[in-house]
Length: 48
Image (cartoon, rainbow, N blue to C red; front, side, top):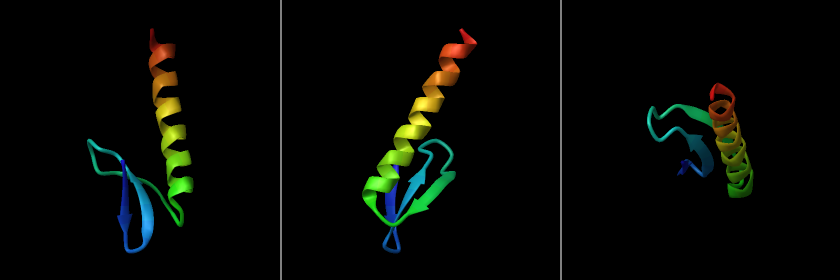
């Protein structure tokens, strides 16, 4: 999830609230969120 905090965009875990980075633009934050989702699903495929 992406939240705007103090003028910056922060990528957070929905479950734990852990921060995965702080970015100046929404586009940068969305790009990072896509990377996280990609690797999360990649790990699930390998475990099968």
